[in-house]
Length: 479
Image: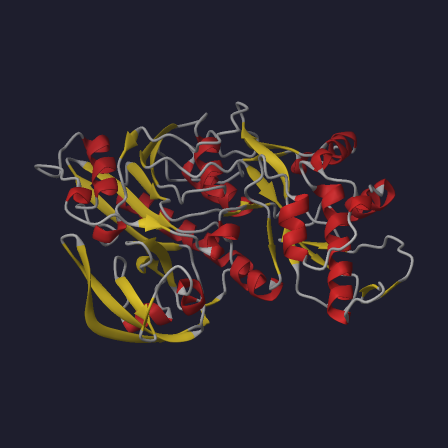
C-alpha cells in the first residue's frame, strides 16, 4: 500500500533536515486492532504486539524499500508473530539484498551510530581455527577505552572468556557481555596456545573517535601521511570531523606529499562523514562545492518525487566547498573484505578526480544505502524494534556502481590477522606495499607468505558487522 499523500506531506517538511534517524509513524486503518497491535482469536498479548510491529514493518517497506516492486502482497500473510523472521524471510529481496537489517534494540544501535557506544573499546575478528574452536583476534583498540586501559592491543589473541573456551555455539554470547575476563593466547607455528594470562574488562560509554592512529613517514625524500579510519561517524557537534581537520592540518604543516588511508576494518557509516573526508582529501579544484561526489537512485515512487520537486540533495551529494591547504593529486587506500559501504563510496567517489590506488584485499561490495527507521506511533515507544532497509543505490560521478564482487586492488596483499603488526609498523605487509609503490624503495629484503607457517584463520559471523557494513543517509529524514 502506498499512501502518496502521507509521503509528500512528510517529505515537504522533512527532507531538508539533517538528521541521522528516520522516524516513521504508521497510521493505516486496521479493523479489530488497538494500540498494542491486532487482536486475533487465541493469540497471546505478546503475539498481538508482534503482529502490530510486523504490520508497521510491512507498511514502511512497501513505501521506501528500493526493491519495493519485489515485495509480496500483504494479504497473503496470516500470522506474523516474529518480526525478525517476517522481515528477513518474507520481505527482504534475498536475490540481491544482503544488507537490510533489523534489530529489537534501537537504543543500543542509536548509541553505536552516534559514536558513543557502551563498549569494551576493541574491535574483534572472530575466527574458526579448527572444527569447532573459535578465537578472537583484536583488529584495533580505541584510545582511552577500557580495553586500552587494560593493556589490550591490536593483534592480541583471545582464546577464552570467563574461563570458557569459545566455540560456534557460545562465542557471541560470551563476547556480548558487558563485563568479563579474557584469556590470552599466542601463536606458535601451526598452534594457538593458551598463555594463562587473563585480563578483566568492563564496558563503559566510550568516545569512539574513528581516527584511531596517524603518523608521518619520511622515506626516500617523500613525506607520507598515514592514518587509520575505522568508521564514518561525525560525532556529537561534529567532534570527530574536527579530528580529521586536526590531522590534515598537521600533515600540511609537516609538508606531507603523499597520503595513505587505512580502511581495512571500516565497514561504513554516514554519508556526511564520508563526504567530509573526501572533501579533505580532494584537491581544492575539486572540493569547491560544485563537483558531484556521488549520485543516488531510489524506487520509482521516491525517484519521481525527488525529481519532480527538485530535492537535489537527495539525488546527489557534491564535494563540500572546503578550503584545503593540503594539496595532493594521488591517494592510496588499504582494504580488506571488511572495507564496505561508505568506505567504498569514498574510494569510488574520489576515483574520477584523483589517482587512486588500492592495496590489500578485494572490498566487500556494498553500493546501496539505507535509512534508520523506528516506530513513532506511540510515545513513549512501546517497542524498541528498528529497521534499516535499503532505500537507494549509489554511483560515482561517472555512473560506476553494482560492484557485486567488491573493488579490485591494484596490488593484492593478504591482511593476515594472526601475525598483525601495530599500526604504523613498516613490517605490516599492506602498509609496506603502499609505501613501496609511492617511493619505489623496497622496505623488506624478502616477502614471506606467513600463511605457509601458521594455521588458517577463517572469520565467522559477527552480528555487529551486519549493520556496520552499511551506508546511512544522514541528510534525509521522515517525520
